[in-house]
Length: 129
Image (cartoon, rainbow, N blue to C red):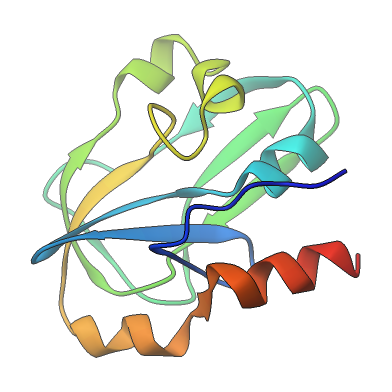
């Protein structure tokens, strides 16, 4: 199955994405990850105002198949969570790169974006899986 990954997004090996919006970023999980999970039934996110650290788990997504940790692709302060996903987790499946975003974050070090994959390199990675 071919996936369409937004060109301006950056991706982590663990299938999270970062959508940079000036000095803030939106973090979510890729359409590939959502497809692999299947029907999503629960999303656990950190509290607004908390800090996330690159490479560490900040929440989880539960599907009928499994519970998977969500890892921070960059470090930063959580300014907002997509609270609509808490009541309506299936929205994550319907639009993972749009309305299915998870966190709005102020990065501690914007240069961490340079350590992530581009959309093109992430597409190649998932195509080989």
